[in-house]
Image 1 (cartoon, rainbow, N blue to C red):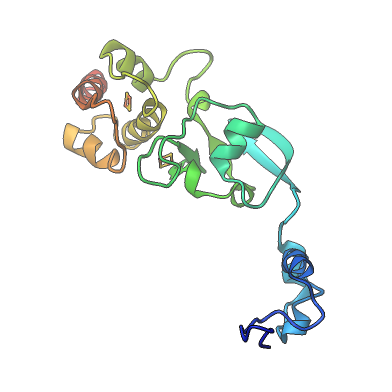
Image 2: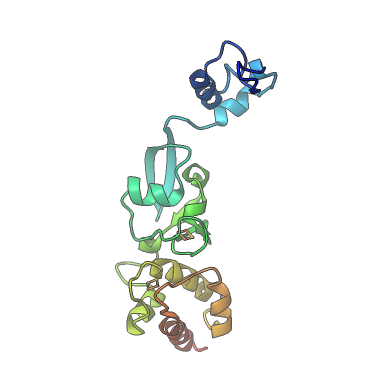
Length: 205
Ligand code: FES
Ligand code: FES
């Protein structure tokens, strides 16, 4: 319907922009007015716009919390749960710093909504040490002095640990393939790869 200036809008007459936006969040009131059909079950499964209760399993511990549907997994880890070992650098999926495991597979925490991580096992850098002992990859990073500012380090460690979990004697080429997508802005690559070679050698590679 054109407005006084001749602009067209899909918002029906008698519905203010505020109530339209609110209705888009809560769903039921406005969508029938737009001639769209939405199953009641779909609406029940939608989150927001207000915070909604979710349950996350992180490092084998269960957390019940309220999150907004727009919040990413890394935001929830760091800002709501104070699990800050995992870092944020680019926040747009291009550096690998925020890598965590989801059901054992490395994912970028900045590219995943927290609500989508429900019913999965989330593992962060805090969760890969065992009984207070650092993971062998963490120890190798320390020995090789494989970091400068350290912002990229948790992500590198998580992906490298996964490479050696799948192949304890992984070659340097295989490690590099496993680290594809990780960027170290300090340029500590030589030491990072040295750490990888040391892990492989200790495993008999
Ligand atoms: S912070 Fe997530 S990929 Fe860079
Ligand atoms: S150590 Fe600084 S970005 Fe890698």
